[in-house]
Image (cartoon, rainbow, N blue to C red; front, side, top):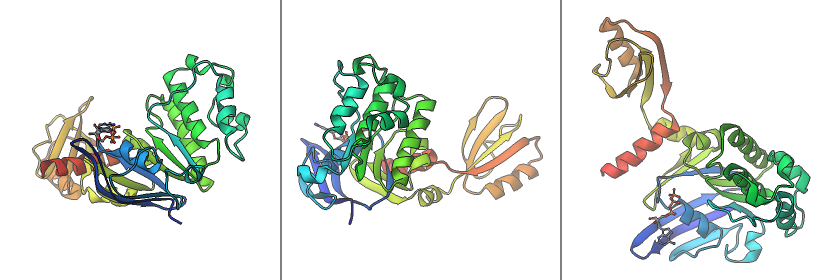
Length: 293
Ligand SMILES: Nc1ncnc2c1ncn2[C@@H]1O[C@H](COP(=O)(O)OP(=O)(O)OP(=O)(O)O)[C@@H](O)[C@H]1O
């Protein structure tokens, strides 16, 4: 059974077309990263899948049912971009309270442990830092052992350690068979977690493919090299940046030809490194191409 089924959905807010004929299916056990610039329509799409909004046209199904039916949503966990936690309740109490709505919740102690929140269990949520609140919010999405979770920018505002811990928790949930649809502005987060990437821009799905295929789509290679000579003018260099310590970062479609030209140019160089484009480069190129049309 398809876990999330979005079919020909359009959603307007006044004159703004937030989603324009969007279709997207997510199957059981998939971990899908939803990428797009600000205002692309990502949160709107999540709000339709979670039944908080209705599409103007098209259909949305969640776990085979209408997401506006409470019964369809019992298998759903969500972390919206902003979470209003009751400020005077302790972390442990909030987890107990939310877990109490489900037939077989993850025991509070276990969940707190998994999210590195054990020491904060007795703290009132109003006294948590932004990053700590974020961790509680994602933990709450998982307390009911949902079959699918929607995570809207789950690690925004978290430091590196907390982000890694959260990635581990998301991976563990996914390894246990859970389905995940997440949005993020951290492309390295999508690259680290997702197997499939959907790029949305101005309400339209621009790409929907495996992470590898998306990366291959951008033919660019990134060359790092140290030299006192400016190499930006070598043939085939489409973008160049100067980094500290004499390092230069150069992008080219053909790294082999670049290396041949570099040697022929007879300039001093050292520490040559070549690698494929990152998701960040792929994303920038896709969105830039569309904007130029
Ligand atoms: N309640 C609303 N009323 C009016 N316009 C809205 C409303 N919600 C969203 N929009 C508009 O719809 C478009 C899509 O917004 P949405 O929040 O889905 O984008 P997003 O991709 O989640 O952006 P971000 O990355 O900034 O969170 C934007 O132009 C936004 O201004």
